[in-house]
Length: 449
Image (cartoon, rainbow, N blue to C red):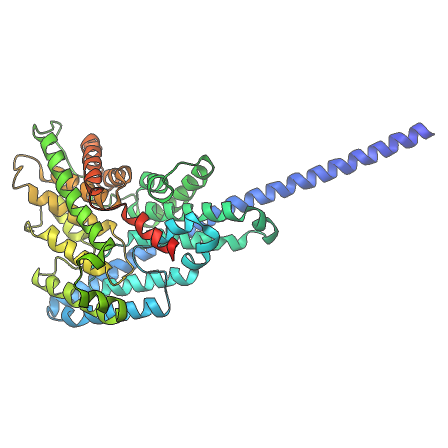
């Protein structure tokens, strides 16, 4: 009798243990699906927002150019007014949305608990889109890539609220870090239709390291965002495919070095200007920027409008149209174009206008390559332009791997891989002689304050 009771008790314990084990395994599966579900949902939303945002920016640019073509004098009024309004709205309602947004993401990745609730909010997401659209309506020299990165990070970071509170308190820091990082990478990938660039950018620029724990979620987010982008826009190449002959020119090595040095100097000077305003600005202008930012924004807008009107409208906007026209041999832009475009770019960013640096940097680099065709007349123009694009972008970001991967994917330029890599390396090293990495230096200012 006692043996039967013992057997019965043992079977009850076994059943109870099996039930507890099954319930525990079910909970683990639920948490796992919830974890990955957040990333999948966030990546799909990021891809959708990136596509809609791109179309919104295109509408804004086309509207401005149509109005400016009909009334060439109108930018002299509209651009300063838009600049002043944008500065006021940014300071009044959307602090933290200024600039490209990449420094905010980097600062958040350094300390997600401190800066995430301040720099990656839904309010800033809305402000980033609205204010950059307003800026492009005013003809500012901005791109949509930096804002898309910021928006993607903010969107996915906000999804942490879907995670159960009791689990979030345990896994909060790691989860928030991965959500922000994956959102930023997915944003870049969807903006350029460049999935490899999204992975490399997350490793080289955002974290400056490789973590095996984050690689899976980054790639997953890029895949889902990319599928949405491809479904809505098709499998396009950002600047179109360039055609390079099978035989590379004899002076290619000389061109790589010269383009790398010139674009490195230009990009380094640009970074120095943005990081050292007190050292080159007249005292009265620096005081105006500090004490009366709205008036300073209007002054910058007037400067952009004057040189934009004088150039026939080629300096307005991100420069995508001009860069693509140069690649296709349809644009007749002079050697002064990259310098004037850089001046317009500085004027756009000094007031804190929300907007990206990538597309304008590619346009400036294209202008450098186009100008150097006068020296290397025997070389194919698209080849020089591609070298200039990767050189200037690498100089501004000081992330050579990201720069050449982005350009390769944007022009389908696999025939120039070695040349683009060498140009990016030379230009980034030259740029370091003038200034530290721009995004990291700007991120440090958020961390300090």
